[in-house]
Each structure stands twice: as structure tokens, then as C-alpha cells.
Image 1 (cartoon, protein in one colour):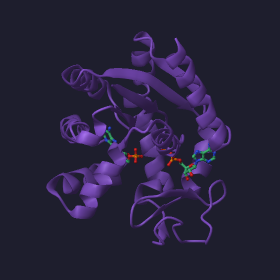
Image 2 (cartoon, rainbow, N blue to C red):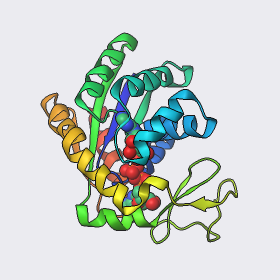
Image 3 (tube, protein in one colour):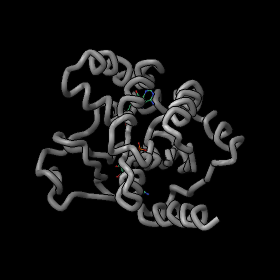
Image 4 (cartoon, rainbow, N blue to C red):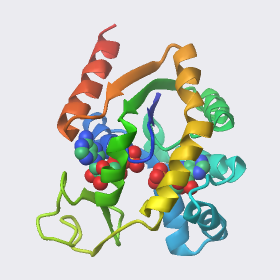
Length: 219
Ligand code: ADP
Ligand code: AMP
């Protein structure tokens, strides 16, 4: 049982790659951001609390985040593992993931660090569009829908994420540098870090990750 971790600055392409890996490996895509957005849409108490933080580009407190993700990993479809996107995002969350893995007899890693130069992010975030219905992700230039403004999968309207406004993005990148970047050293010290070049077309990034997974499996 394997928890594959996908790390990277906001806009690096974690969600994009995690979805592709999920399809290739047959493991569920577990995105803490998507889980929070589901709670917000359903108006749950956790959703109401999370929204205050998300709108400001801050992290949701660890305790609430860890509880939510643990609950998701307890579901039967994650019995063989999961592709983790956006979790962990702090050292306490990474410690909690180790504890969860211990309970479920799972291995944490590889942890893929998708590296993208900061100057690329403005463009990635400004062009990101998500569908209202299910959060399917597009990019106006790099991954456009077949029909402008309409989701290919479910036909719902494409909108810009509230937290993709430039001011909020700046906060999110600062929060990343301070709280999440230390996870790169955390996973390196455990011998499971894999650096991936995220500054290439989406299919090439996926191929790079799958090649590493193939090499690991062959060891
Ligand atoms: P994250 O989950 O890390 O925040 P996303 O996967 O949502 O990032 O990607 C951010 C935006 O950049 C999306 O609009 C996505 O379509 C686009 N994108 C993702 N990967 C690439 C890539 N390799 N090249 C160009 N655009 C990309
Ligand atoms: P994402 O969809 O991964 O870009 O996440 C959107 C927002 O949700 C983040 O900017 C945070 O406010 C919140 N969030 C997502 N995952 C976490 C996490 N692991 N810990 C704390 N906050 C999170």
C-alpha cells in the first residue's frame, strides 16, 4: 500500500499530474483543496471555517486538515493507497501522514517535487479555469476546453477560482515558501524525494513521473 505524495508551489501542476497518475495507477486522487471546496459547496461547519483561510491565501489549521484527510484515507477505495495532492503542506501534516501510514500499514513515497520557475506561475494561475460543477481544471492557453467557457466533461460553466486573484496568489506563494517548502528536505532526508521538471508540456511531466515509478518498481 502506497501513498504517493505530489509537492510543488501553487500552480506547479500538482492536480493535473495527480489526476493522470490516478488514472495510470488505479489509485484515488486525494486533493485536500478539492475536499475543502466540497465542504464549502455543501456549507458544512468545516467548509465555513476553511473558507476564511482559503480566501486569504492562508492554510487551513493542521488539526482540521489532518482529520479531514485521515477520514478520506479510511474510505475503502483508498485501501491500496492514494495519490496525495496538496497534502501534506506543513511538517506537522507530514508527521501525521507517517502516523496514518503506520496505522494502515502503508508506505509514504515516492514524493514527487514538481519544479516550476516562479515567473511561470503568474501565467499558470491567471489562465486556470475550473468548472462550477466538479472542479475539472483547464487552462485558457495550455489546456483549453473544446468550447470556450464550458466544461468538456459535464457541460457546466468554467470560472476562475476566487483564490487565483493575483493578490491571493502572492500570499499563497509566500505561505508555500515558509511552511511547505521544508517538506522537500523532509522527504529528501527519508530518501523518497524525486525532483521532476514541471516546466514542460503536461504529457512530458507525466512521462517523467511514470518512468521514475517504473524504475522504482523494477528495483
Ligand atoms: P496545482 O494543483 O499545483 O495548483 P494545477 O494542476 O491546477 O496546479 O495547474 C495550474 C494551471 O496550470 C492549470 O490551469 C493547468 O491546466 C495548467 N498546467 C498544469 N500543468 C501544466 C504544464 N505542464 N504546462 C502548462 N500548463 C500547465
Ligand atoms: P489547492 O487546491 O491545493 O491549491 O488548495 C487551495 C487552498 O486550500 C489552499 O490555498 C489552502 O488554503 C487550503 N488547503 C489545501 N490543502 C491544504 C493543506 N494540506 N493544509 C492547509 N490548507 C490547505
